[in-house]
Amino acid sequence: MTQQRLDRRAAMAALLRDRDDNLLVVPGLGSTTWDLAALGDNPRNFYLWGAMGGAAMIGLGLALAQPKRRVAVITGDGEMLMGLGSLATIGVQKPQNLAVIVFDNGVYGETGGQPSHTAAGGIDLVAVAQACHFALCLDLHDEQGLAGLAARLNAFAGPLFARIAINAGEPPRVLPERDGGTLKRRFRAALSLEG
Amino acid sequence: MSDWPDALYDCFKRAGIRQVGYVPDAGHARLIERCRQDRDIRNIPLTTEEEGIALAAGAWLGGERSALLMQSSGVGNCINMLSLARTCRFPLLMLITMRGEWEEFNPWQVPMGAAVEPVMQICEAEVLRARKPEDVQGLAGRAMQLAFGDERIVALILSQELIGKKVWTK
Image 1 (spheres, one colour):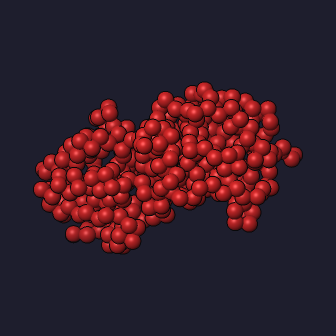
Image 2 (image 1 turned 120 degrees about the vertical axis):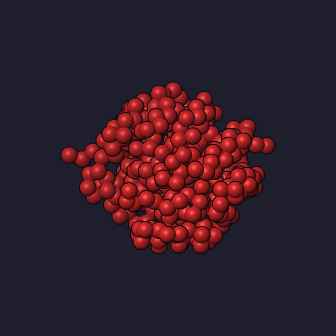
Image 3 (image 1 turned 90 degrees about the horizontal axis):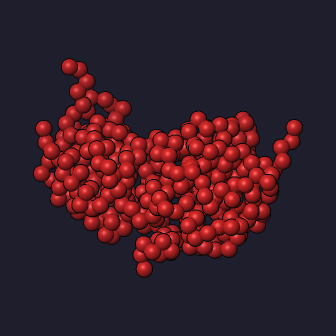
């Protein structure tokens, strides 16, 4: 059986179509950072050009520090697999305002399309999140599911985990700001934490 | 019994630390216990120390100060993730309890213990080392200023002679 898979740029656009200023977004190293940048820049994005395996934990620290805002980590399957333990750490903390969303294309797209564990061995990230006691775990394959998740991003009781089946196409890179100090300062300024 | 862990806890409170990430170490047991009893400090046990580097970055993005506690063996787990703090100049306060020096019984602790200071220096951390209980308060204050005032990576190393050696047989 062939599972339906979604275009990554269209999926990112659908997820954030109704984004408000209280949604902070941390994309993972690689394609999800390019996907987010392709929607247009926003100082409430903290783009990652490195720190592979760290996206979900950045999201946790941010969600705990900003309980009145919502945090969406949107990363790839390879990046998530490197930080699998962080799902257990998040499951212990249970931040209600954190969503971890994985664009699962089953490959390491930045390095030549080598299969990741999700494709090579059918490793089930949704089952991992369930085992880590995420409050809501979604496995999405179609536009209807995406629209449902997009609506939830404006009000949810997390931690929420969603895996989105993505096709292996690699659209052209869209490169955002890459100076880390600039990304940090403008993010904090957008939250009125510094001038 | 020295009260240097209490001096560290008092420094946390003065600096306004709100998130404390750790992989437990016996040398940090009392400080962890003080933090666990404090309703204003969020305790975040980690599966591996590198999670704490990313956690600290997220906390700072959200306006909170944090600290990361680990044993010397955890330093090796952090090296790539330290790129995040180095590239973005995130404040990062690391408290590292030493193994593998001073009458260490377990030879498996020695290689990483010997690498802690050079690795931290290569990774652009300011390295401070406390050897005696009376060193701790002053060095901890300095570490807070370097981390949160100057947005630096600080490794405050707590020597094994300060902690005392692990007792293997009763």
